[in-house]
Structure formats: structure tokens, C-alpha cells
Image (cartoon, rainbow, N blue to C red; front, top):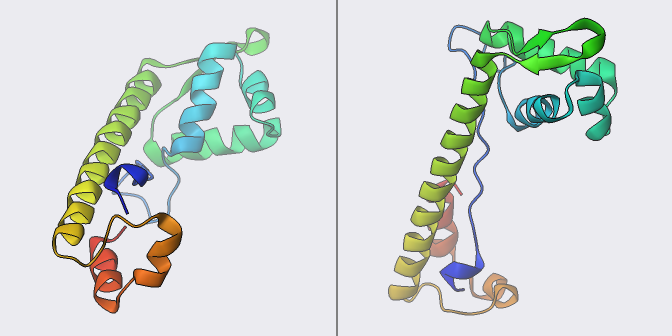
Length: 147
């Protein structure tokens, strides 16, 4: 397996520590919805663009706002909505954490796979052959990485 043939993808979720463990917060779905509101000018259009019912989009946004204790939109009645400065900052922060976390995860993955190849545990075999060559030691090492 070559390290350039695989990648790690970490899911980012920002929530308040003062809320329950699984409380609403800022995840990829909320971020994408907000980005569409910014681009399209309304929650209704953003929800339609995502193939989501307006009521569901409204509920998701309302829960995120309550979980983070911040307003995400400035509602302008019939004219639609726009993002608050706080929402723009949170989305920028989310995207930065997402980029840097995934870059770090991919660096660790490449280094770890290269190390396993150097140790002879893995070879540069193709992905389909990997299942045939996975040893209990390899499985334990991959699980230990949490990937």
C-alpha cells in the first residue's frame, strides 16, 4: 500500500463545553447551510439548494444558535437573511480547524504507513491485496492510531 493512495478524513464539530456532550453545535452541515445562506441570501433558498425542507433547516440553525449561544443570521424578513459577523468568524474558524486537522491526520497516516512498510509489516501492495496481508499486529497498530 502506498501512502499516496490513502487519506484520512477527520470530521470537525465545535460545541460549547457548558452544554451536554451531544449538544447542538457547529458541524459540517450547519457550516454548509450557512455558506449557502451567505451565497443565496436566504435560508429557504439554502435549504432548497441542499434538498432539505425549510423547517428542518430552521430547526438545525436554531439548535446550533442555542448550543453555541450566538446568532448565526440577521433575518431581514421577506428580503432573506445574511450571516452575522460571529457566524462568519465561526465558519472561518471551522474551515481552518478542518484544514489543519485533516492535514495533520494525513501527515500522521503517511508517516505511519511508511513506518509499517519500513518494518516489513506492510508492502506497497495494492489495496485489494491488503486484506490478504493484514496481520494481527497491523490491525492492532492501525486501531491504536484511531484511524
